[in-house]
Each structure stands twice: as structure tokens, then as C-alpha cells.
Amino acid sequence: MISNERPSPPDSRCPTGLDPKPAAAEDTIKSDSIQIERKLFIFTLKENPRGRFLRITEDVSGRRDTIIVPATGLEDFRKLLETMIQVARAQPTKSE
Image (cartoon, rainbow, N blue to C red; front, side, top):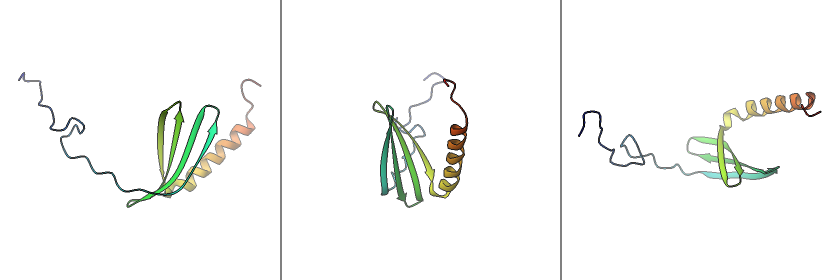
């Protein structure tokens, strides 16, 4: 072995070589979706042993991106979203 080479970890899926944590069981409390233009947004309120959280998934032509908001931050998230809506209504779009 060349001095700058390192042996491969035992499991190439886990670069540290440690066993990955098993996925925690999640219970779905409520789920709903909304289609906006070509994007599908899926809102899922879930709970696991660590607490409740909102998972927001954006699906565009099969490509998915997800954010997770802990339930403890939902009120702050709502306030910020309301502020963004007010600003969007007050500001004319560049096309106007």
C-alpha cells in the first residue's frame, strides 16, 4: 500500500466504518399535499421517540427534496411564513 492510501472501511455505505444508526420508527399523525404549478408539496406531521416534526417534501418530476421542522419551531416557522406572504402581497412583481 502506498503511504497516502487508506484501507477501505468495512462497509462502504458508512464511511466511518461504524454501524449506521437504525431508522427510528415514525408514526404519521396527518398528511396532506398541494400542487403548485409543476411542484407537488407534501406536508406530513410525524412523531418518533425524539418528538414531533413536520416533514415538507417538494416533488418536481420525481426529484424530491425534504426539510424537517421540529414541532417546537412550528410557531416561529408560521410567523416567518406569514411575514413573507405579507411582503409578497405588498411588493409588485418585476413583470408588473
